[in-house]
Length: 109
Image 1: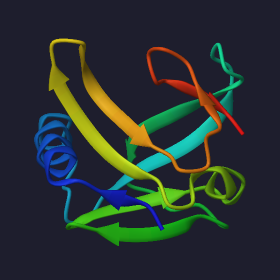
Image 2: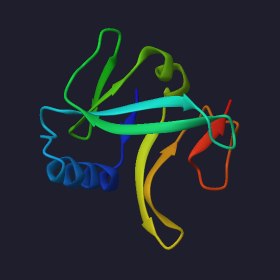
Image 3: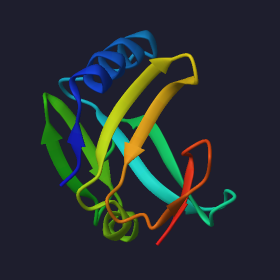
């Protein structure tokens, strides 16, 4: 399961609405792809289509879909949002990551 913090939920609702998505019906697609300075990087986008094999979760009123391969890397992750002085954006608190880069956008197992 992937969890969504309250601050991340608020930002997701705001951004989905701006982009023409409806957070009560549409999804946040979270995935992992090769790349980044630590080997793997996170991918987050909005989607309104569920593909075959996708895992679907709902936490804090936000629907999340994850492809089967990415799910193995993201089990137990919490999606958070940081608006602090060190940068603004979504943060993945992933208990499976052994190492992350300085910016927190990539990781390795």
